[in-house]
Length: 148
Image (cartoon, rainbow, N blue to C red; front, side):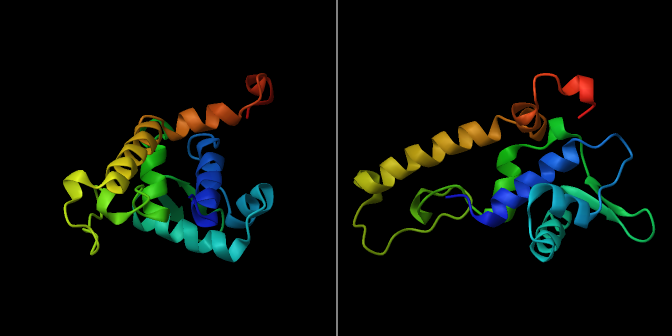
């Protein structure tokens, strides 16, 4: 399940994807327009900055912006940075695999095999869509008219 951290991080990234080239967004502005607690958003943006997905500029006129184009950032990358592996259980994870203590042979474990299918389905969707795709999903049909 996506945590609030992941959800708020995605909202913030979609917000940043809507900025004009060279434009920066201030944390308070992002927090207010997306109903995100500012302190929590500060922590989220710090993690996104440390992962190289966003950059920040301090001082007057400072703020945050995407470190890459929205077409170059997959939704899966963002979710993994903020919420960790996509698999519902560790024995089904690609990035954080750990065998279960109670499984005698994971090759035939029905629970693991089903959770691998679930992980693969989630990864397929999130990794094949970019931040630009996600932004387009939420844009009104006449977004060009309003320069959103």
